[in-house]
Image (cartoon, rainbow, N blue to C red):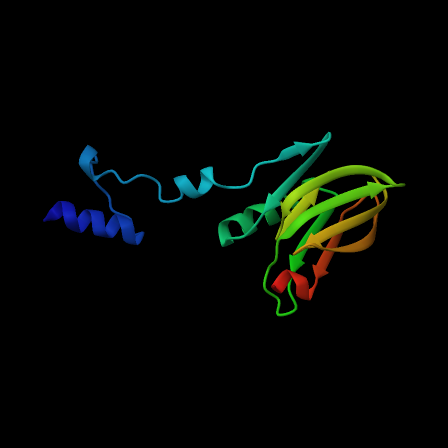
Length: 149
């Protein structure tokens, strides 16, 4: 019975002082699997990016790493719900810099300062934006009804 009470208190977040925990009472860290599932920095065409943010843990993680990425996108629908683009392609002076499939709802890209044309495809329909990246950070809140479909 003591073991069940101790386990219930441990899972509820209560702090229990014991001399030495019994091995059968040890509970694995609750967020271990969530931590393993967090987005990882990927590289495509020599460009590093971080893509994801669908859940609260992922979104918080992405926001915490935002200062590492000069260009940031948040895709959303007209009702404010988050969206994912089929593909996002960045071009600079007509040259394709990177193309990222299943982008969003948060997409953060390491690119040097400059002017870029960004194309996001939602349900087969392409939309374009021009983005200037300076020495700081540029954030694009890409709101479109197509992200809602």
